[in-house]
Length: 281
Ligand SMILES: NC(=O)c1ccc[n+]([C@@H]2O[C@H](COP(=O)([O-])OP(=O)(O)OC[C@H]3O[C@@H](n4cnc5c(N)ncnc54)[C@H](OP(=O)(O)O)[C@@H]3O)[C@@H](O)[C@H]2O)c1
Image (cartoon, rainbow, N blue to C red):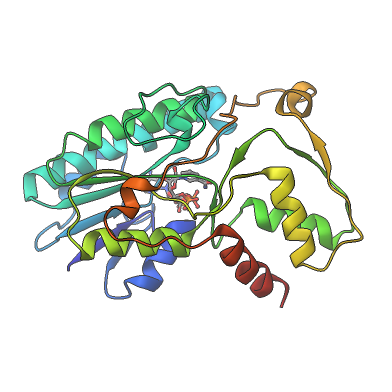
């Protein structure tokens, strides 16, 4: 398989490069997906699969005037540019989406749930899904709460623990972590098994938990039972802050469709234990 990884410097892009060392990897300096002419001019000859790990992921930043434009460019115009070249060259386009395309009122999100994004990031991601779905050979992988090499929730909580801080954390947003290792395994499985094109949810499996409960788990794994985690609500937490995007309260993705392809998920607690062990070694 001749693979091109787009957005190769991000959390997922980095993990994809490890999985596919022979793939051509392009970061935003090498290919800016919002630059239509550059995407058209890229050498797509012989390419079988485009893995699009590029995105504007600053959820609150997308609510600013500058961020709004950037988010629409990277999350909607960029995927449209990729969908165009993928269709023209008969390339499979694998794109990553988010549970933020939903309003979080359903207990679990299935692949067929209708779009109802709350914030601008979610709106731009929904637009990306729509344009990618027009490409004949496409996979859209919806994921949640991604943890890999980069800035993420687990690292933030570990750095608080290191400073001896007992944080207050929201307890009414519920979901499952998705380690980039799990996302990469699912990508490799779908491509390798030539699963039917379309949309698939991918997160780790296991009991859906709140950010507060996950923080307690992180502190226990890091041996910091001396620290306490105080529950708060999303409403309370953001009451004093400005420019915060609304977030879905329920992020849990149904994994039934993925499992029906023969994929076996790993519990998020198993991958979290491994991750914390590495980070604190
Ligand atoms: N992080 C989460 O919790 C989360 C949750 C649900 C879904 N997702 C989705 O999962 C995917 C991967 O997320 P991630 O956490 O790996 O993201 P990330 O770490 O923020 O990485 C995104 C990458 O996209 C690149 N990029 C930005 N603008 C670009 C452009 N115009 N052209 C080319 N590349 C560009 C960035 O490059 P530079 O480094 O050069 O700026 C960055 O390396 C995204 O589609 C995201 O929406 C993430």
